[in-house]
Amino acid sequence: MAIKQRTRAEASFSMSSMTDIVFLLLIFFLVTSTLINPNALKLLLPKSTNQISAKQQVSISIKHYQKENTFTYHINGNQKPVRFDQIEPSIQKLLMNTDDPTFSIYADKSVPIEQVVNLMNIAKRNKYKVILATAPE
Image (cartoon, rainbow, N blue to C red; front, side, top):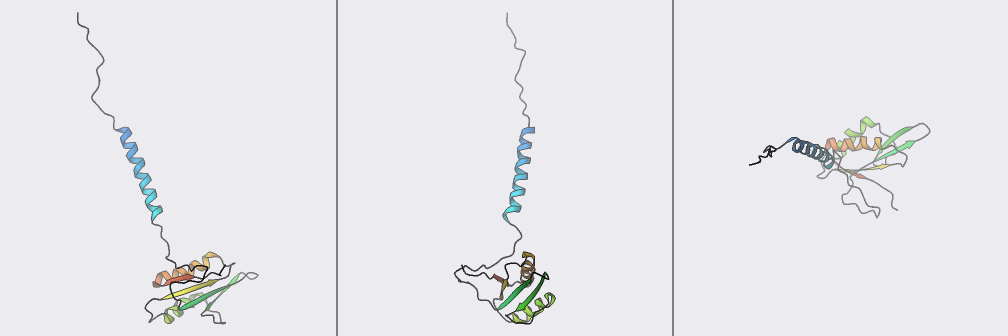
């Protein structure tokens, strides 16, 4: 007497686990691709040994008066302060006929980073290079 097997191996394959893996990989690559290329400003940061690769042509100083919580901007060390809305036209006039326009930012230690970034945005709009000045160690 021949005994027949009732359990047969099914020839189908479940794709649900494969789609889960592909979906997780897609999310991983989307997240890591945004971290690799952040939208940042290009800066030329000088070393503390005062070796600067680009020569500054214009300097902008930011002075912070903490008691009044006000800021003054000075172009090329001029004692007369300049309003923030006058900085961009003044820099454009000074750097008009230069082949590698560069300006440096001298900021007090107490100046918030927002004030420095506002000057960096001026440089980005006009395609200038920026040097963030630091004190030597």
